[in-house]
Length: 487
Figure (cartoon, rainbow, N blue to C red):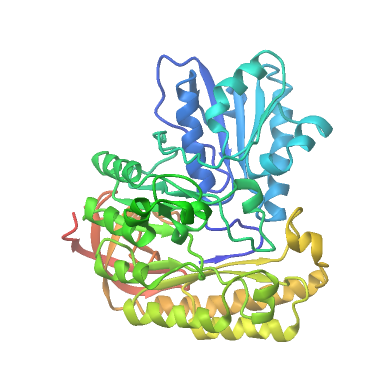
């Protein structure tokens, strides 16, 4: 699986930019059209938004032209993402000329960052709503219905949407996202997330387990626990993670960290697959890895962004781990879970990056040999410390050349990893029909690798044992040998 600088982080390509639809309420009279871009958290947030607006009389539609309200849930992590959203806003406004009653709103990280530009300078939207303000949507809708622009981008210290039951949008009925934390305290110098999503706070584990149990009752077979940094999950009764030291002795004694939450979820539904994303190397602890090894239903896959293989660049990025500490974590994962797949995020051409730094990145990749990669050329993000304090001094051609070399090496390693599956029988959860063949199913194994095989008499949602016969650098190809005992 290769992602270049034009594709956003940690997101299945089939989801990017999708308009989303749900089973509609016949009593609702207005129509809502939503597009989502960026990380999995944005897609999860769109499900929260749809749930809130369904109670305000909105059914969703996949036809933009008939919508009363058009929303785009945005990402600021890369410049390319913002360019894509601006093009879509142009399209929305062109449609609006033929449907003058239609209102357009921007949600998510771009809303938080560019509120004044959208509303006051460019005047291209009617409503701007930040990631922590979705419960205010009923009031904001009333504002725009009365002909006024509406905005709420206030960051919250405690909002987790734990009391909102998400509507499963564009769902395959098999896999679902479950948000467990919001915000990030790790001030990486290249990243806008702390400024657009605020400080870290965790969701009540009971509400998480209730959502997991409800998904199982509805027939879902796999969940992904989501957060900007899941390893920082810490519930001690509510509040910001940074305030944990002020908690009472009882709160500390009964607190739940990420390893414990994983265990609770695994035991709550032993037949449900559990994934999580995203981890931070400086926060991942051995107890998380040991919990993964203990439970069969926790998938053997870790997304472990490193960003650079150079200690000097890591320090400039404010990544609070070294190259050697990262290697130690990788070695522990390999020792405790030998068949665990590991994927990376990598930035090519960060300010001051030298050719020696770039070679350090390539050598780190050689050491780990990642299964998957999410790779980007550095793009300056306004408001970050890197933008304010560092000159973007690596020439674009040099960035692109280094990125090509990183991608080429990842392709080699991806093939090396998929080849290790050939000849094995592996459990695959069927998610849908293969994009390339109506005669084949597509699913993923525990390591998150896509597997395709002839349909025969199986169905979506089945756990199937598949004999892997061949592979590409990103896909396993096989033949079903029977249902798994997990059904």
